[in-house]
View (cartoon, rainbow, N blue to C red):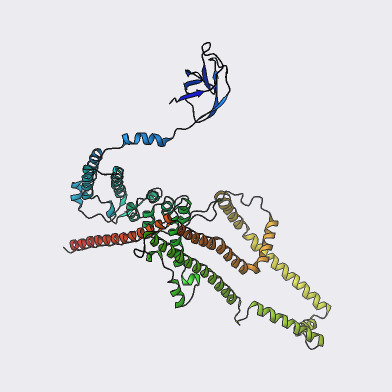
Length: 562
């Protein structure tokens, strides 16, 4: 669209003798004289950017100074505001749309034939409710304040019906199992990113894993946390999603990102603090006594119970205003996260201590002596030997007997000749054994080298292999064999410092950061309530599903007995 432009200035040329024009870059457009010193024209079509502007005499001859002119992209916000009221549907049209959708989705014939009970593979949330449709139509007939929310509700019902059909087409056999491809299982990531918590139970009942990862290692919890879907995060955690799970490491991020980190990165501070607390408490719960070595007695178990899991937390309802209650909940979260972090670090310290104890016990022989004790005894024996030899009180009987037997030159010569022959015979036998298996060994190595090193790993294989390097590596390995235990301890320390300690500190800092923000505290309070509701709904749906299955089993038993 051409835009009108006004150009003002002092023009020295006489407009009666020449026909003025304006040149935008290389495009010349005619100009209209509004009054002396004011010109008006329409800009040519051009993409956003800067170009030169000048006044010409109609033949591309410049007769003014050259100025800069900028074409700017038109904002879409103003156009949306201008045309939004005209494109918005009225309540009468929405009422007609609701009636049309009810006819399509609420089929009385099929519902009467199939009964009111949902199928075992379907979620009760996907079942169409005639009362909800009638209530919506009545509200639209009377007049509602927010028609857009009603449009969203109709769209949600359409998606529910389509999801129900999509899952029913993929049901195989009578056992209700659903076989979805790897690409189709990614639907759990889409519904998590969109916040469709009503579709979660149906997708999970279809056999999709709650911690399924996509190509980048993102789980459904990562997608929900990234877009700040509070209800979806609560539903995923109630269904058993792993909060400490991280994405696949990359060159830019070798450690990976947790769901709490993604939420904090997008500005969802309260959600990030909630997920950090869940990650700390769940990770502490996964460290069992046998694996982590926290303790061996009842005192350690009681100490672990001091950390309150997220399933035991609930928002405080009494004792102050809404802001004061949110502050109390946030401070309780900080206390709980700090205790969990301290116990996690204590668990790894105890693990290192127990590892050193096992190493010391492993070094002891059958007489209960360690390597240090053996070295001390050897040093003492050397001192004893040197002391008695100097006094002439000690003699090696074995050496004396050998010297007596081979004291003559002829006996010693025969012994050395026989020993050389024995060594040669042994060398010939070993060489024959090696040559016998040489071809088989070479063929096996060549196959492994071509398949694994060249084709699978896309490397050079054994081409250009240098034996000197292998000798050096073997020598270095031989030197490092004595320090294996030391390297293992160092590896555990490095892992704890890079992975555990850093992640624990970041989680605690995210929980602390939400205390300073009232919005974050309110979001954390909402997450506590959402998780409580999601847990209650999950328990109710499990009871309903089990009762339906029990009724079906009783019907089958009655049919069998009849």
